[in-house]
Image (cartoon, rainbow, N blue to C red):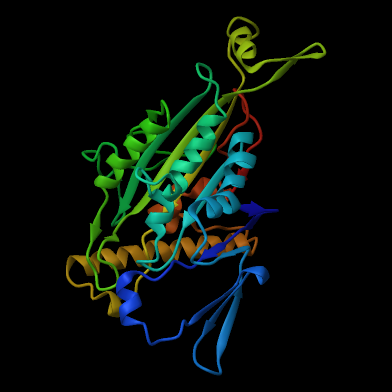
Length: 336
């Protein structure tokens, strides 16, 4: 998210799992949350601590719904549905619950639904059947190679950049028109089944790839005829036969990124192939951090070419002119 060009960051502390409750029963929490002050304090020992400020701070009891509505819903409703490009990223150490927060389907309990499902629910609720279009692509970046999670036979997918607009595209990635929320949940389930995961000392089911959901929304725009506002449905039909014969459409893109968890090699116990994976993971996360720092410092240069992850997120940093408004060229607008 951005607020006057600023990247916004929210922090959430997950509850301890059953194993941690047993192993750490005699230890005090090293993390102290101060939600009212939007601060998180790390207690190093009895006399030393460090405090960090965030835009939002959530305790371990915060529900999926509360986090979504406070952090992500403004990006979806106020930005993406208004013609902006929006980006939401989940970042943190491996085992901190990022995939649960982002990709949980919540089939058995709707309260557990993650960011992806809730975001698509809001996007689909705002569309008009027969005139608006919502399409999704779901891919993973594994060891600097892009793979289509909806068609896993498609691997080593190249990244294309328009020479004129510098807009990023992936022409070989599957683009699926979403029919309804159940259809999207089925697509998400297919994608998650194809994602790379492994067992490490820090997480029994550690994601080893960055998962990126791309949502493309094309919505008809209200126009005025004289002093009366034409409805979206009539507007689309009239434009098909009048003027240049093209409907006016507002295009926007939402990126939801479940980043691989950062890990220290000495603690994760990674060896052999896992060690090689970890090196690629840390390289891409370091590149992402450099880009975010460049945005925060209003740097004239954002080093998006340092990794494929940052190249894929190029639009999110406001580098390109993607996200045109209407069926003709318009102003590029981005919110992250």
